[in-house]
Length: 357
Image (cartoon, rainbow, N blue to C red; front, side, top):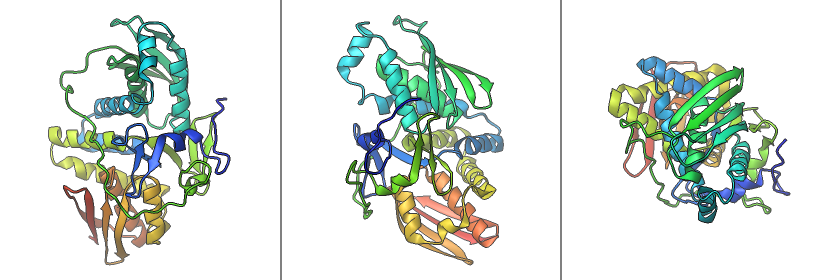
């Protein structure tokens, strides 16, 4: 079992507090790269939502997801790993083993499952690869992107030759090898950088680590690499929202205007499976606090009743999934079907209206 350092006051994983900032805008960023937006969010919806979108549009989207996550993971680790360490690895002055171990610990700490190295080759040519075993991954295509992006952050070559084999219900063997990026994706699927604007969120902070005290409600299992809420049992993880949104933007550019509606519908269906509870919309302030804790923005307005719902959310992330979640909660609360209209403005403000159909 990996022993992860914990805050002596609130018992969260210390690395979570050391590497991330919760801002007053309802946004989480990487301390090493404040333009890199992060989220601490539920992850059990990711595979079902992606699969639902692919089914509705009739086109596989796995390659988009993997490529965007690869770039996001590379951006996440690049400023964390010192330049001198990269140089020493690339000159074969030190092995990759301690770097691989550090990346595995980070993934466990971030709630992304447990990994074990199997084999790797690093001779700085086109035959280089790494193979790992993955247990309890949070999302299969994102996990493949994580492995490739972690390699790229260290050796500074692109690892886009990816494959996997399922060895058990939650066990996969994954391999990432050096290859040229598909010409069709070159220069596309790039992340959007976060530009800070002040909001009105105030967190109670842990005196030990400085992270929001509300994080103490979540439990880190260092054996499985899983984070769960103690109150509702949902699985959580630290993920890259600014590389998830471009997946759907690229799909929309390539396949048409039906993509946003497909994402919203897929998330709505997942919400109504019972994963979310109707009580979540009942208290505006609690809902606002929970969105901000997840780094999903600053809820400014929320009015809801049987006749409909109106909402304003400043600085949202994963906005299509957010719209689908809220529409699903509305339909569950009032036992109705509904229509939704939404708009994300140029100044990053999400407005939505829901009416019973």
